[in-house]
Image (tube, rainbow, N blue to C red; front, side, top):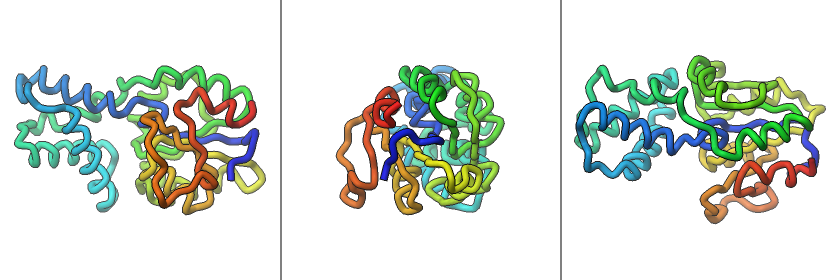
Length: 227
């Protein structure tokens, strides 16, 4: 159950604070422009395939997120007949630090930071996140990465590490755009969670409004929290 005025608010990063979908689509377009290949490919379809393949790669033995990005790109290429050279296979990791935040991200973070501590729980490597943090306007009090815990959400390691750091005396809410990576595991672990439902999708039947609070964008968080 969500409490008003949480003392700690953590966020998923890519897809919640950072426009991950536009970043991946843009990186594929840039690759095709640079290499002169696959000009007629449906980049939207490529993103959907990429998203599904990445989940499969993350379920395998732990590897760095840089390697996850590269391996997923190789599998997408194999399934679609795209030609991506070994030299270009790491194009997503190279592009990731340039991916931009959503328009409402920084205004929302500034407002929240005046009222509570902020954190990030992300499926990413430390060096890649360091590039991303340059796009975010506030410092974070707590950061848990896949590199730290050698695990990817929806695994529980990020949440367990965060809970240990935060301690049981502080009220904590996690905010995320992904049902699969964040909302569903947070509910299973008893972590208060807000789903950032930018596409205004229906809440799946396995979740209830008593378990999950919904906002359409980060700008609604301060009102939801009573700040």
